[in-house]
Image (cartoon, rainbow, N blue to C red; front, top):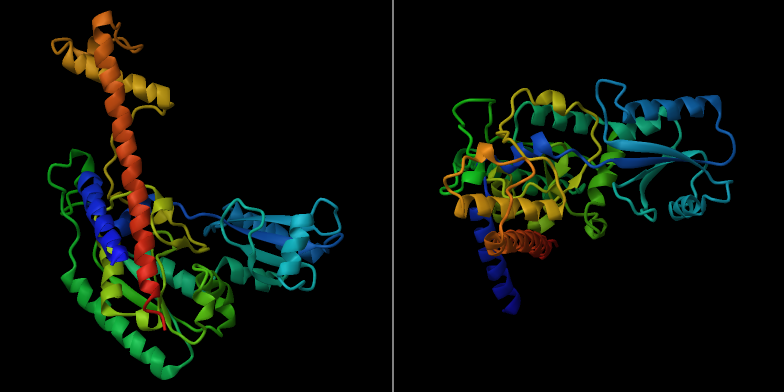
Length: 394
């Protein structure tokens, strides 16, 4: 009962935060335009000198990572000679991957921690490392998203034909119905910071979902399967269950619906989030894990759906406090002064203005604390939603 009440409280807090900050740019479009995917890491593990052919493979990987080709990919590449004394961490990585034959290439999730595990290791050949960088399913997903689809659902088959067809049929039926039931968000009343967009002009934005099927045994998709199955720590515990992952933005997998958790309610919840008004511009506070995809996302943005505002130069916290104080002083104590006549250094505050300055600083800090609190509430609410969905896995 307490958990249910906590959930209700989180929903109410989220509603308040959304009303304050939401704009009518849908989440899937904002993610496509603004959220650059996090880089994976490909580590080439070897002992001693690499052969000429191996060096050519490493060079090719580096060229792709640096965007030399038309379809850049979100990864970095480095080599590690396990014979060197300073490669203790990489030797542990190799051993925890089952000590595969060297040289080999290890694929690791984005992040800064050196102790990240390899989600897959393959022999160091051009043919094998290409499966890290790209695959038919990922290319098709990127093509559909760049053509304007809101999200592409990856349906990961379990291998049980009856179970798979039942879940796939439900998913297909529900997303087809939602395409006609859901609507793009309108302007948020009373929210000038919401940047309402005139949806009658600009690029074609539509509510459009589709599905691609993925077999666990497809050798061309082993890397994609490894990425998906490790997006949550317990997904490997359901090898006999179908899974569904909505992918949006620049190849970001939202979260997994598993087995009996593939329900009309959960499918609708995911779709509503994706087409709903964007309420948080910080990608890290939104659910999902970026996939490694080789494509030119920037080239797909011919027109922006996000209005650009003239933003002030970046400053530190002290500068923000000073700017807030200047605003209060000019607005409340000197309404007749033309803002153009104020020095770029700021107004010369008299002793009588000190109270206003403190008040302005206090308001600014209070607003910043409220903002941080709302962001933490968003993160807590998303965590609660994911935990709830796990209950449906069977």
